[in-house]
Amino acid sequence: MRATDAFPAHGVAQRPLPRRSLRRWSVRHARALARLYAGFARALRAADPLFARIGYARLERPVAAVERAVKTTLFDCRMCGQCVLSATGLACPMNCPKGLRNGPCGGVRDDGHCEVHPDMPCVWVEAHAGAARMGTLMRLSEAQPPIDHRRAGASSWLQAARADAAP
Ligand code: SF4
Image (cartoon, rainbow, N blue to C red; front, side):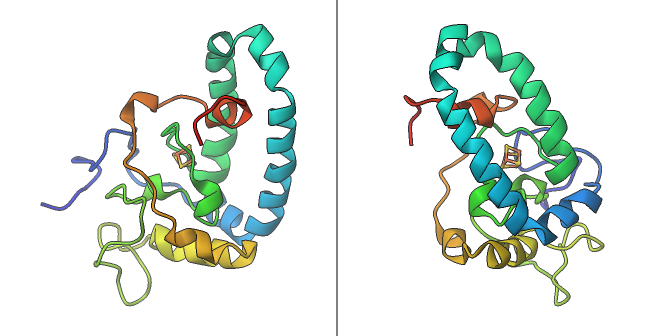
C-alpha cells in the first residue's frame, strides 16, 4: 500500500499537501540561507552556558514555538526534532509523503515529480538542487539514522546549542 496523507509512513505531523511556495524559494536560495544559518548556529553554541543557566527544559517550549513558526514558513518543517536540512540542501525530507530521509524511492517520475503527489517535485530532486548550490552534494550520501519519534515537536535549535549533545 502506498503511503498517503491519510496513511502517513511516519508519525510526524502531516498536512494534506505541502504548500511548497516558500519551500522552493528556500531551496533556490540555499547558499545564502545556509550562510545565515551558520552564523546563527555559532550564536546558538555561544549561548550554551546562558541556556544551561536558564534551563534547557524551561526554554524548550518557547524556542520550539519560534522554530516551528520560522521553519514552517521557510521549509514546510514538520518539527521532527532531528533536523537534517544542512545535509539535504535545505529541502526538508519530512515533506516526502513516504518520509524517506535517505534518498528517493524508486517512484520518481520522469519529470522529477513525486509518484504520490504528481504536481509536487520530488523532495530529493530539490535536495540535490539545493545541495549543489550549497556545495554539499557529498552530504546527500550521509546515512541518516532512523527517526526517533520521541523527539517529534522538540527544538533542533536547542539541540544544536548544547555542548553536551550527542553528535
Ligand atoms: S528535518 Fe525535521 S526539523 Fe528539519 S525542517 Fe524537516 S521536519 Fe523540520
